[in-house]
Image (tube, rainbow, N blue to C red; front, side):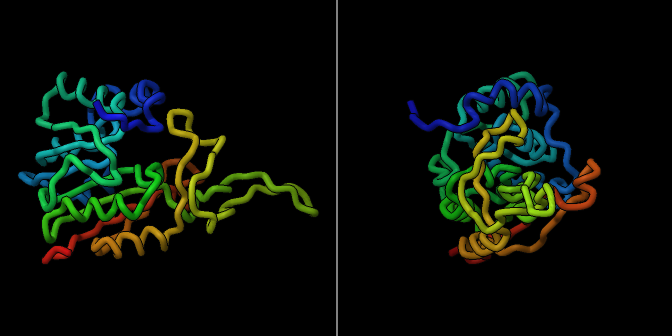
Length: 239
């Protein structure tokens, strides 16, 4: 029995009750656009949680393996798979090493809205590169680090009055606790600058081919990007 646990373990039931509880799968046009046509491809969903993006990939025709550190989240994913079989395999594992997955065994990998909740970025991205076949693709999305840094939305006292900080403490990388984060998410997440994400992807052998910053659906996020997507390609000859 693995001792691996996750900050999502105690939140799994609340998360599942809120996010795709009926198992319909992810509905995100930007995700679909960047993934393209994965029919017949073997695709890993890293940090898949209760399987929302894994189900979408399967519905698009991919052969999907989901991996996550939270057994309670995977229990929901497996229950939904049992109710509506899509052929998805769900594995318990750490994103830092993706230990259950063998080298060069996937055509594609996705990591949807999860890298900011994973403590160590560098080993995670190197593990993604390890399991990709030469020339394989990687699509990831994160909360936009430029517009939601640690001090986003803080009230700050100033000699001329109180103001709300839009993008404070951007360069303070590492774990930070947000009292305003959605209650179904862990309070602690891991902030990195945009350049850290870009450089770590490149250093892992994942060449960025496209970026996407979709317009949000609330007044605030129609003015600034809440989310950023990366579409990357592993070296054709491997590393």
